Structure formats: structure tokens, C-alpha cells
Amino acid sequence: MLKKVNIENILFLDIETVPRWEDFSQMPENFQKLWAHKTQFLSSEKELSPADVYERAGIYAEFGKIICISVAFVRGGGIKVKSFFGDDEKVLLKEFALLLTQYYNKEQHNLCAHNGKEFDFPYIVRRMLVNGVEVPDILDLAGKKPWEVKLLDTMELWKFGDYKNYTSLELLSALFDIPSPKDDIKGSDVAGVYWKEKDLERIVRYCQKDVVTIVQLFRRYQNTPLIADAFIVTI
Image (cartoon, rainbow, N blue to C red):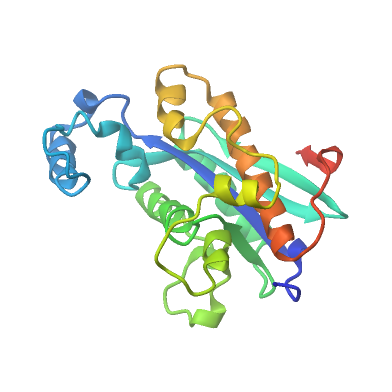
């Protein structure tokens, strides 16, 4: 599986997102109304108010923001990891866009994320547009033919054409004997760690574990050995 793909041409990535405002009450009135409309379709639990489900806002690009993008690439048998993070979303998006524009702009390059086609890739592009950041060519799908799209998704690759369910990164890491990236916090904890605990560094570490796990999963898809921790470095 994927034997013909050169892993050194792939930039792996994972993002962490949170609601744009710490609390529902801090949202501008027009956004409160729009969120209330949105929440009608979020859950069958009709007794919940828009404020009750506000913690879910981070998964929607219209109501959330990116606080960390961790990337990883394989060189010389090792994994190199770098993170773009901070409270200023525009700054981190511009830094990430510059990386793509400078180093991942050739036909042989690919981006890869877990559930990336449904979440990470569109979320990044939407937030770039909102922040007035020019979208790098590798993320700009407008007018491209299917074979010109350079986006890989480890969840989609696992489906083998079966579209009826979601398979988490945590489950696949357990299945392939890859150390779990969820040994500290999970995605549902990120908003609380960011807004209440003010511990962005903890979120960055979590995001980096996720992206390393995606690299290791891809290697298992290629039937190649996992890369030892000693050869994983943060730059």
C-alpha cells in the first residue's frame, strides 16, 4: 500500500482549534444569533441552549479559530517536527502559508492529515480567507482536476472506498501498535486547556504527538517500521 509514494515529499500536519471567544456571552450579538441558528442542527437534545453547546464552536471555521498547526516531515530516516502557534491566528497562518509557498510548491509534494479532507484542510483555507492570508497553491483546489489535488488523508486511505464510518486516529494507532497520542489530553479538552488553564504549550505538545502519530501510521500503511523516538526531533 502506497509503496510508490515517497514519504519525504509529504508534509504531515495537524491543527488544534478553539471557539473564537472564551464564552458565549462574549460573542457579538449577530454571532450569537447565528450560533443559535446553527445549534438547531447540532443535536437532538432540544433542551440545550446555544450557550450550553458553545464549547463545540471550535470545530466550525465560522465560529472558531486555529491556535496551533503542527507539521512533520521525514528526512534521513528521522522525523522533524515544527509548530506554528499563538493567540494571533493571522500570524501563525501567515507563517504556515510561507512554509508551504517556499518549500511545498512542486508537483511531487503532498500534504497529509487524518480526516484532513473533512476538517484540517478546509478549516485552514477558510480561516486564511477570513484573515486575508493568501492561500498557497497546494491548498487552493479551485479549478484543479482530481489528480492535481495533492492532499492525502490517512482516514480516507483506511476506508478503501468504504464511506460509512469514521475511524479515529486513536483507534488506528492502537490497531497498529503505535504509542497513543492521547496520553494527556484529547481534542474535547483543548478549549478548556486554552481558555481556562491558559496552557497553550500543553496543547502544542498534544498537537505534535498527533502529527507524529500520523507519520507513523502512514509508515505502517507502507509496511515500513516505525521511527524510534530517538530519531524524532522538534525544530
